Length: 445
Image (tube, rainbow, N blue to C red; front, side, top):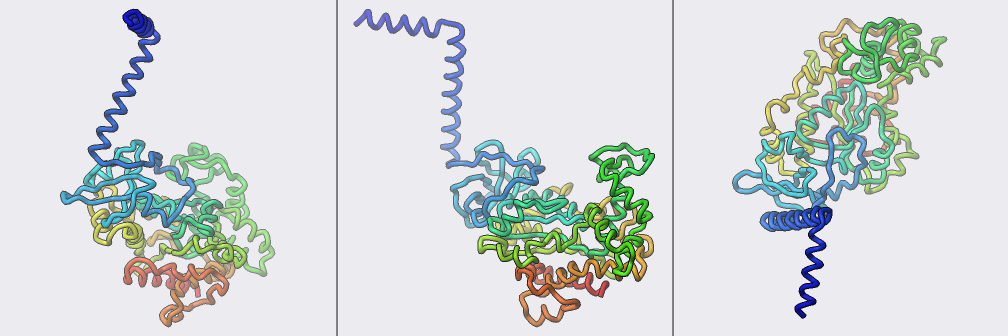
């Protein structure tokens, strides 16, 4: 017995005595201590199972999962001292205070004040990528919408400069059930896109720094050296004048067929109807299931008679509306109100895309109209489908009020969800949305 004990002790001494094995023993002891510490910490906070996935704000193409599961994926509770408890979980249920998600690389839930929730170092956000898809239509203020949503820490699925096929499938089959799209007068979009491409594309002997990136944010110093065919077409074929292309789109023009093809070569020229083809084409909208799109929210960018826009108001209201779907209205207002000032203001200087500095048609103080009556007429006919689509958006639920807004013939076979374009937010917001969309039609009627 004594000898057996001595042999056992000798074996332990030989095992722990070697230098390499000492290292592994230390690792083992440290691991045990870490597990014990984590267990004690979780026991004190009452932590369950967690989803430790890390999300980055710049990950715009991540596939969505399910919209109806949002309230099962994440929970929040507000304590008496005004703290928000944020967790990320696949199994936790809904609380009376609504939902909030704080995605982090750690699995530990924390209580934090609202200002702490908005700190970049905490990487907290309201994740709605499973439920909400944003179609960012070019030259329609979409960059400002994206920026404001990010400032409010609202994360949704993004599509730009073209629709992502996977996101469209999610809208057809689920899990994405809410679509947001920014809408601008189609003719103004064309003029803005034409001019903007002339600005950012490198010209022959251009003195700016040439490259693939950076021109959109620093057009005075950088230019894109790609798409040389597009630049040559705009500069030579159409003399750097959007009206030349507009008049070439007249059906009796000898350049008509070429002009149609050239129009589609301009980046951001993808029409509103092409963006929403899956809701317009009967064969495609027939594929939409009950698990697919249920809500359609339009954000109009339209100038008022005084040259101002309600765009900032629309953006603030869409943020409020999205937060309200997860919280009470009052809590949604509080979250936006308590957001740090440096990221809260939208402001005209933000929504006016940098192209406005080059006299694009978004700017209320732009140069006189760039299109002749003939050019505007032919371009409007070319974009007839877009205007009929906008008309469909303001038809509402088919009541007398909706039919009174008819300016042009709506799309008869479009999916009925399009008629909900302005049926979001407060009653005042709905009226403002319809008024802006109708204004686009009246100016081109």
